[in-house]
Image 1 (cartoon, helix red, strand yellow):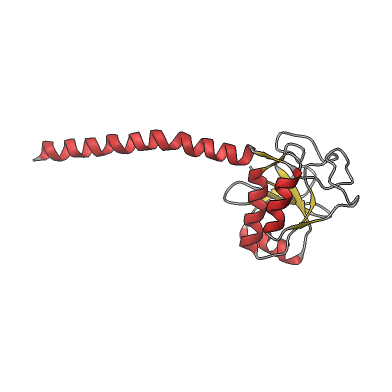
Image 2 (image 1 turned 90 degrees about the vertical axis):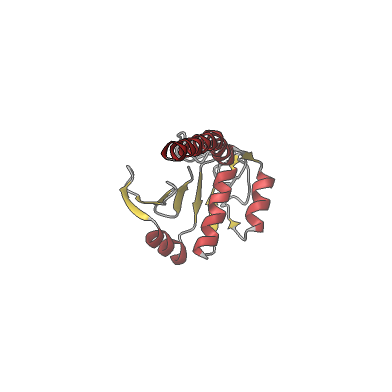
Length: 166
């Protein structure tokens, strides 16, 4: 009876390991595709508008190469999904003030590469970030940072929240 119990246990363990081996790559690929899928200006604007998220531009434009514009061209779908999830969880009005346009700091996880958005710092947004996320020190430029459980970084710059979705 003991040998039957062990062999059944061994078979169950083998099935479980096979399932993990098959599913793990799919989860990783799905996560990578979600954050790395580049959207057009129109695709991103449609998704954001449908979620009730607004945006503003000092130049009243969406040209990616003009720093006075607010562009979503080539933004990651994961970034758009992240700000939509933030709006839903916080129940705050969200206004995007910066997207993928020129003029932001360079880097792998940059605005230009589609990983960041800037949002207006309303009291609702600020209170939610400070209470929902863990304070994680100051960035090199002195901006206080808050980190979500997913690893996203919310940095309070002088005129906005700079959000990095990983």
